Length: 113
Length: 107
Image (cartoon, rainbow over all chains, first blue to last red; front, side, top):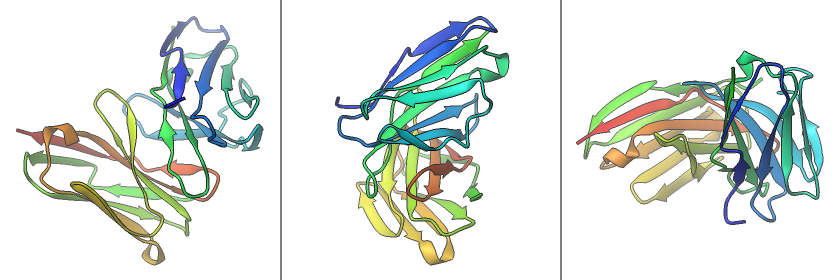
């Protein structure tokens, strides 16, 4: 597509429920990145995909977080048993390494109540 | 891990003024990018600049990789330049973001 598409744009969920966040990158971009941004804060790295593999999962905060990418395209970030501290904006970016910048989606605002 | 420091943390300008934002980083990198996050939260890529100088309209950036810093210049600022400017550095896999410079431009 023309840009990076994320869905849903907003998600309110009850504590303890599971959520799935989706990212559709720019067509042809081989690299995909997930970050999260808490209110008024900078961006925290979560996970990076090159193709369908995730060489760097070091940023996932706990084993409640997982992500996958299929067909070298769409990625899903899953948070199980959500907690209030998971509330944040989850941002996805894609790029075509090595010489191209990141293009970010508009993010998913997750609120855990 | 790599540390990224941005200065100043906050900047208030009147329309038409010029400004320089600085990014210092703690280790060698082969990827450095500048982003603008507008008041609605959208992140826009301004420059991919691991070294050298680039210009795009009223914005320009310079990275001196050997001295581990980058500068973003904004000339003739406009109210639409308001928002947070992030520097992000890293290598081929991921970027580490600084804490940003919050810019407010008043008419």
